[in-house]
Length: 428
Ligand code: HEC
Ligand code: HEC
Ligand code: HEC
View 1: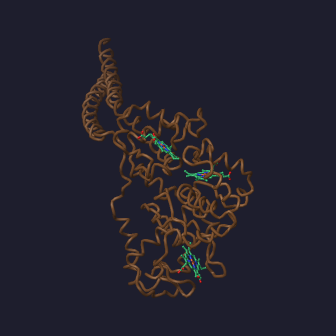
View 2 (view 1 turned 120 degrees about the horizontal axis):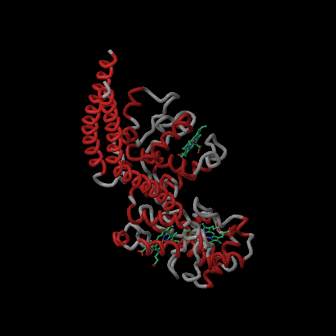
View 3 (view 1 turned 180 degrees about the horizontal axis):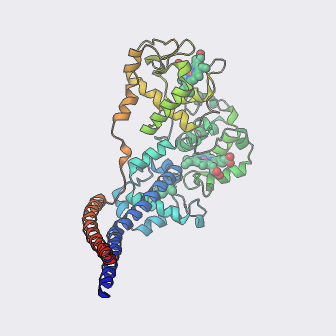
């Protein structure tokens, strides 16, 4: 009588132990995969943050895709991938003495923490430069390459007639060759550097302007030019800044560089156009009685992306064309310009304007092929940083653990149920 409950109890106990063992086994089998997955997730997060840091701090000199600009070296170079981690860390943290490469670590007056610098090293060694380029564009921080513009010859000749005209001419040439990419055409400023032609800057003391240009402002993109420019050249730049109201607009023109686009920026532009512009310019930009056609060959002739951006930003005073600059960010306006520019290839010679609602349906079908095509194209953003073979290992794990768990659980339940049925029998 006494040995039977004992047998039942031990059957149930054995079953329970096996369930625990199975759970433990499952957990241990999955553990390495879980750790690898966690590490991959952290790396992806760091690379993601690094792409934004790169866009905000480095792209202006090292280029959209880390390809380097003029004398600034590429960061996508294979040699940097094998360079010791610490050496890259040191270069970014402390800068390179007597070059335009500034020090970025907070200890050296820079703007970045040690953790952020490590993230940038990871980007240089493991990052995806195409994805990084997309990030730079989507943040509206695509550098203006080439870095320089040519002063308008007629206006430059005008300047010679001003008092001390030769000095101003020198400054205009230097500005167009050195400063324009950051401080903008005619010194109007860009998303990365302030205007220099405004009253605020003009009213600064010459000593302060000289100091900023010579030594730079630590922790910002404004590098010191003391090593590159002669004191007379810096003094000419200061003179020009103080007297900028005398320099005719258009003397230092915007370079004619297409605004780069990504699938995201085109999609954003398309959405913003539909929401804000189509009611006047028509759904496909073909024009309505209220506003002219933008989707027509003549519109694109002679209009650089910068010009179109300027028209949208400032509106057309005295017409129904509103000023969008105070309602939309530069990124948004650039996205619209990129979207509009897509029409150029297929724009008709003569506009057929629509009356209100989007035109006849058969017309609506064959327009906008660009955007629908974009939806169909494989996304370039599918690259992930999953360690190679990871998914394969995980599939194998899943397959094996499932079989193992199945076997163990079957045995355990058989034991438990036979235990219970024995218990039932015994009660009878
Ligand atoms: C104002 C322009 C400028 C900016 C902004 C800038 N760099 Fe540089 N960088 C340079 C120049 C110029 C060099 C080359 C220095 C030299 O001649 O050794 C350089 C060199 C480097 C190098 C060494 C490359 C090599 O081949 O040895 C690294 C790495 C680097 N920069 C990373 C960065 C990172 C990361 C950022 C953003 C946080 C950044 N740089 C921002 C101008 C810049
Ligand atoms: C790589 C981008 C970049 C380049 C190139 C550049 N600057 Fe700057 N500059 C900046 C930034 C960013 C600031 C704002 C710094 C700050 O926030 O303190 C600035 C600030 C200034 C200021 C101070 C403005 C003020 O209101 O106090 C002056 C003056 C100036 N830059 C002149 C120049 C001149 C002249 C050149 C060409 C020789 C030049 N910069 C080239 C990015 C740049
Ligand atoms: C309330 C109606 C209205 C809206 C909304 C509107 N526009 Fe316009 N737009 C006009 C009119 C009218 C003109 C023609 C101005 C003129 O006579 O030069 C114009 C002109 C333009 C031009 C210059 C065309 C040329 O041939 O030089 C561009 C570019 C443009 N608009 C873009 C846009 C964009 C982009 C949006 C949306 C963000 C927009 N517009 C929204 C009414 C509008």
